[in-house]
Image (cartoon, rainbow, N blue to C red; front, side, top):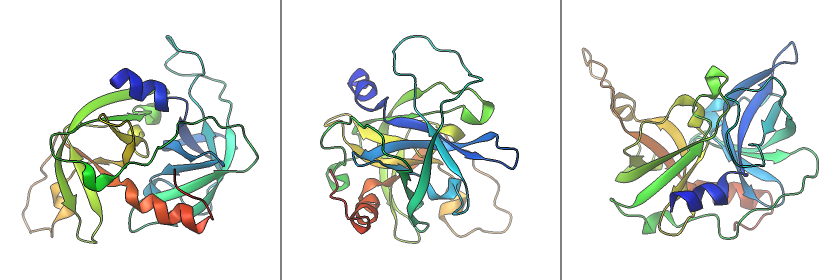
Amino acid sequence: MLQDVHMRYRNGCMKLFKTDSRNQLVFLASAFVIHPQGYLLTVAHAISPDDTLMVVPAPAEAGFHPVSSEALAAIPVRLARMDKERDMALLAFTDPVEITMPDHVIGVPENVSEGNGVASLGFAFGFQCIYTQVLQQAVICAKMRSTNETNMFLFDSRVHGGSKGGPLVGLDDLRVIGIVSGRFDPLEATPVVDGTEPMPTSFSYAVSIEYAVPLLEKEGLEPI
């Protein structure tokens, strides 16, 4: 199953960068293709509306790859839609690109139960300039709703910063059920009490993919 997830999504999961004042690429997060007409998803908190954005695909061939690369074939993208409340951003390729992607990508979050197996895909160590795509296995531990009524999945894998924006894929049907948002911090999920000590956890969370649907529809696209 994990090999199937990797084969299905590895080419569509990309590194997301912005260009700085010196025209250098600065890593921001992971992103993944969500529609064949040239649209990708990532986390909203990683980008700003005025960023000049680029994505870099994973190497097309399988096998061992250098941990970093001096030459990155960056492709320009633009911010199409953003939902800050749900921490979700829809990007679009600036120029036409040829996209081959699987059918039936968007899953049904309400059908996911605690105990279901999942996998996340992303560039975990991108902030350390290590651009190797990383696949992690996990189990859905809880289905939660945040204080702003956002549906989230809690899973038992400690993702690293560069994996934010990557897909969380259900192992039963190989569909995307969420966007990885980062490690779960219970102090961010509840009102802070004075004197409360930090509580590091080994859990991570993903925002339900359902919030991508209205973003796609606002672009005149039919979710697949």
